[in-house]
Image 1: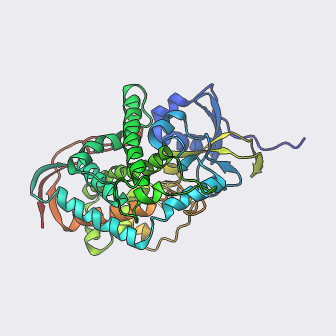
Image 2: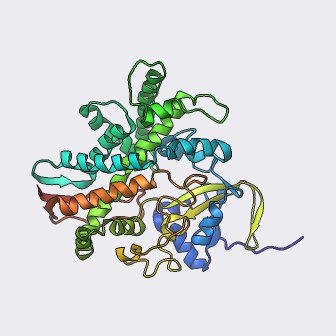
Image 3: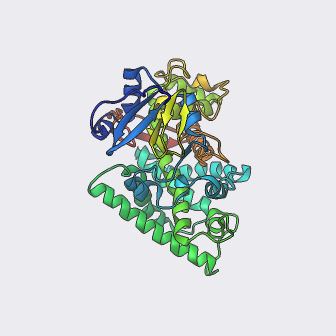
Length: 413
């Protein structure tokens, strides 16, 4: 029998509590301790392999070696992703479902995203405001924009009502106790509402724009030529709505960066908004890691991967990898001026290829929304930062500034 390299091992019966305590630093801490970009630990009672780095990301997104089925913990499926969603599919089923999302990423659709973002921020801050909670305002802006863009009919009061439900899905996805159950109830409520709309679309009881997601998803067919079940379509519509509203986290960090790095923020007015928001996405915490399972036994760098083994890729750690990024713990938007990246070195929302891989289909949406938002805050309004707690925890997932970022004396130009 051939001997293979032994993976560095995180000693102990289980390290789930350490993961909760260390948050975004969990994998990085052990990678540094073992001086290795790969190691073995135990989480939720099972063996897990942890990876960090560009080559490791390339391995992780090899569809011949890893699959997403049964990778996410049950509590995450019941809150963040939903049962039967695209994140848990593989091979042909994944390609068909992913194509449904990618069909929305046309130039015209993305231009509409940009236009709606500008319009909704102007609506939100149309009058002078003495005080604005940026995070809460962003969630309202993004909820209205997401419902309009997907073609879901609503009254303004309904949009305000759904802000909290959509937010529960990502704010409390990893929580335990009452907050977790609140998130599950919010998902059930939202899915039920969307299922009803889907059935009305299919029975032609309501008229909706045939060029938008509600109609397109409702009539999308699987590889066997059958309409998707209504509950699956509801899950996938939420997989559009939820991530758009979750961009509020990035918006909060974007405005924090404007406070912390005013000289860098000044460059946005000179047309460098995209570089600024890309550095926000790299520098600040968003997703800590992503999960998959080994599809079949294989060897990599003489390390053995056994079928079914849970495997985690450190997204935050890869975005702070000194092998990839010069001075990774410094906020330097200029690093993106002539940046020539690839699908595996800059992965704030996951890596891989868009069409055939598992890279987030909404990444282009995220970039456009953030770019429009930072330009709006830089060029269309003026405001002050009152005294507040700007700190954020690396243990909370998702992490947010403690104050949610408060701005005062808001005036439109």
